[in-house]
Image 1: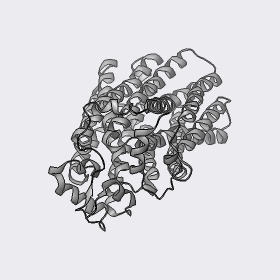
Image 2 (image 1 turned 60 degrees about the vertical axis):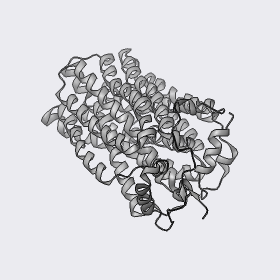
Image 3 (image 1 turned 120 degrees about the vertical axis):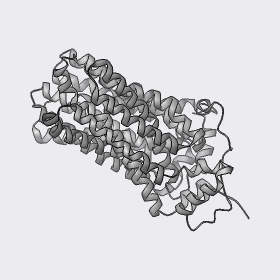
Image 4 (image 1 turned 90 degrees about the horizontal axis):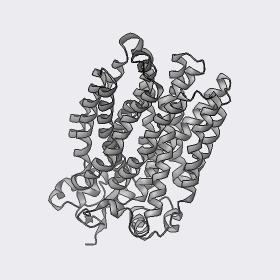
Length: 454
């Protein structure tokens, strides 16, 4: 009997209820990530008043979680390539809840900074793995869309954080925003019971063949499991990080890192400082938080649109145009427009900054093979945190300079230009960029990853 690669079976499969269950679970995890990361932006103005923090100190507090995400993405997330995605994600959701409890109980700069960093480590390791799992169970024809859909719900978490902050802070204080995050610990037993392991990971584990066949029977019930095999070597390389640089792939890997960094600088910088920027410009705090909601509503729609456009026109082209529109909308925001124009520009800015944050994960998932996917996505996201850390820090320094409102937004637009130049310089192979969307991608992608020379 001839064998068939597991990625080919998954790529050709029809969407089943099991697919939908996994997407829902991963979506919930992304909402948790969005809430936890944007919750600080919703309380920072109050903290600066209560603790008499300077904008620079507040910026470093915002960067603490992002520094933790860098550590989690680069050094914890790759453990999933060796031990599996599922256990890493379960422990990470527990860790984020514990860290959030520390945030709620924090009494000063140091305790809040350490707690936010711990939350960041947990989320930094969790996100690359549920994004990778989404790509590994999705049929090829809808892979970019599903990855972008899950990634887009980061904005939903941000919207929830801003809405709850408007109600909770006046009634219960800033700590109540973090107490909500502690409730995410109830997801740990749910994930343990319902979340499956990656089929591509299981295919490389002969002693887990029964579990693999159970998962495949639910993902592709019309395909016999006896002859499904892994298309890759059965053991993870001893130096998986080195694998993402070999065979001429270093240039694209570095450019992907730059794209991640510029995207995260824009997204996290705006989500941290937009309410304060608007408040300093004369808007009341409630209005500033409402602007944060508008930004993330745009991000939600922009991410979903990016998934649809990416399946049709290609991820690279979508990212390029998103960066260009992000830079333009941010520059126009600096003109202090009227309310209607302001809301429209915030929607566009959110769609093209937070929306890009969703689609870059689809780019990384497609580019790296499953054997080193958590490593590739984790390191891209981890290095990208340098940009994420820079967003709150540079934003705080920018506010400390007391520049005119217009110049603040001109400075914020610069990363969009740099990101556009980086994505334009990535050269995808002809076989990867020109294949029909109905063809399975992984077999071709393995060849692309190993043979790309630019």
